[in-house]
Image 1 (cartoon, one colour):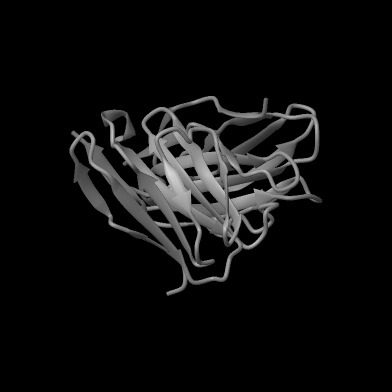
Image 2: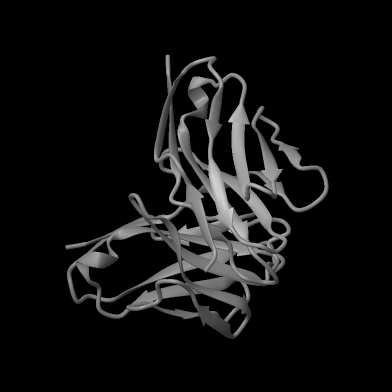
Length: 114
Length: 113
């Protein structure tokens, strides 16, 4: 089925370790987004991309980096993980920047930093 | 600054009773408004949206929301809930242009048998 695929689904990291979360979409969407979901905080935007080769900061970008080398992929990197980055991470995509069609979300990556 | 406020963090309701999940936003310009639903251990799914035109919008599973510009609200309602409606519900707003969606903190709807 077409959609947004996130890998991995679960991960446990030690403080200071690095990792990359992969988001892949097969709908030819231009816009892609990374959000984190925390209890009582809802979804907060980390970074987003308006097209291949472009990225922009969201509300909570510190400690994360992103890359969009191919249109279908949007990578989220943690260079030195901290316990505060324990969260569920959601990737989303959209064909238009004005959100006319809303977003399509992946199923999430649950990350625990110990 | 733009913001979305979901007034209730948790809403317990008995099966077949009506429910209203409240959402207010702060903006003085045209907005797009959305409700998303998240079932346990899943991603978010679009439930319904308001872009323009009729202020009352409906979903295929019996939910409806009404855009009220004067009260800057977009409350979600269902006249009779089912156990299967138990989920987290998020209100989201696009303020203008190509700015990303801003989400509220969510409301956990628990339907009790």
